Image 1 (cartoon, rainbow, N blue to C red):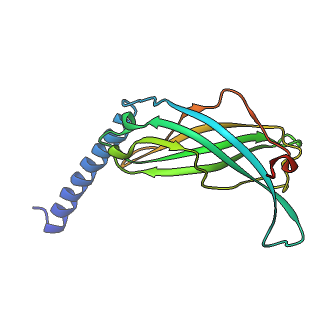
Image 2 (cartoon, helix red, strand yellow):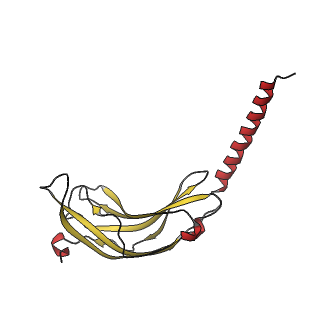
Image 3 (cartoon, helix red, strand yellow):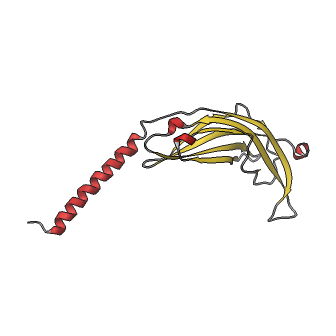
Length: 178
């Protein structure tokens, strides 16, 4: 005869094995639902201004403000395993030293399928800054709308919904002052 502890141990081992197999099946089944959302991205304007920093009051820094129009429908990405989406607009450019820089200039967390249709007209959320403090040596930037699917169970999935066709040139800070 088995003791009560041996029986509880056997039942809990069977239960935990069944739960792990179920979670593994859920994680593997999320690869079956592949959606490719498409969107439109249009950069309306890019302005660069001189600014003083709080940390270094005697140092001038250039800050860029991007106005854009974007529309995208992320509803195909929502299924029974989708917890939320992280949608973001990023600017990619190469510094004169050959370093690739990626800066997020707008983002949104989408938690419901009803909120997955995004239509933004000329709204910037974050300032565009370079580590060197100046955009004078940076020639142009490529903008892309990307997303990250966060499932309940499984791996994170990344993708791209829209990209500008051509790189947008950075204006000189003296040209942007109106």
